[in-house]
Image (cartoon, rainbow, N blue to C red; front, side):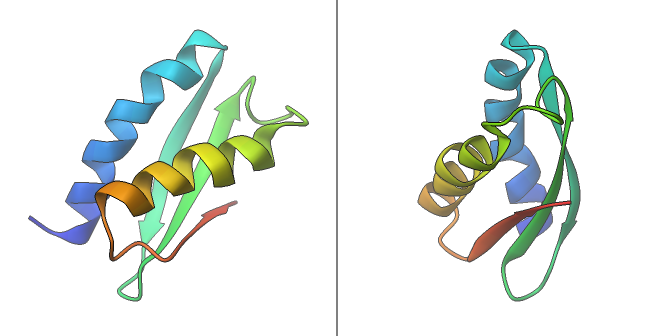
Length: 75
């Protein structure tokens, strides 16, 4: 399974909690060096806590489950 496919599986686990708050997440790209680019949508897009959600929620879970992930960037 490719790195991108593994990242997509973890994002599918994260998605329901974001959707409960009216938001969502889209995987944009996964680079070979472990940088994941995502787009927060819906209520998450304009939320003042979106950076916290991105780093402490999405990034920490991805790093925990996939050690090759080095960073998550919101675009």
